[in-house]
Length: 292
Image (cartoon, rainbow, N blue to C red; front, side, top):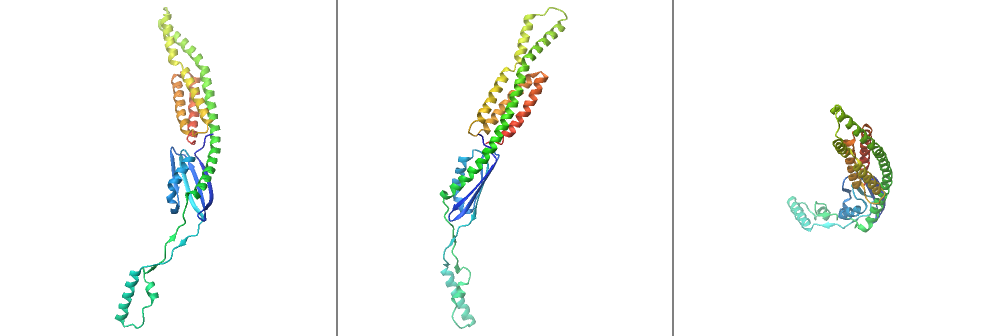
């Protein structure tokens, strides 16, 4: 079954001692277009994440959000001492003490309270492994694809309905075409007779003109090709591969045949059916834009 390009999926699970949530939202786009929103701890996994998404999504705008729901415990390294800065502070305080004649010894606490002497160590981030993240991404993608499949089934039924309406109009045109040729033949005979004003008609020449007119107005080839394209659409909708691009191409071909039928129509009923077919094709194209 074809997939819609609109969907949402989410999953969460344990990662690095915390708990993590992945959300995937997809909408229409002509190409595979991922947009990733990641905590900075996960930037090193961006390549693996993009490749994993390619396995599940052929095209569409794919917005992926990763966030902690339970932040893992982070360890802080010990303090660091800038000895050069501490010596400089101690010397400066000694010079100040002597200059002011202040008795006593320099307090160590005063030294370490000075800027850049003592600093807390950096936070050690938990190690993030793709092996822990990948199952959560896969579950969110599967959830999103399930929604896309449900919507794709609805779209497929709608498209089949449109194809049935198009086929109905083509059958009306096919039934009308022979009668139209007879009318055009009779019209040509009357016109020639009026022009000749009772003089003898060159039947051979008239037969040639009628044959030329019949060939010019014949839409049998267009009807045959139209039926072939409709059947190709049905086969595509019954498969399991992405069909959006293929159906878009077939819709263009169907439109080309309908336009030719209209240009050759020269019949009110045929032209009415052509107008109806163009309307249905426009609706068909609009729905095809939603398919992967």
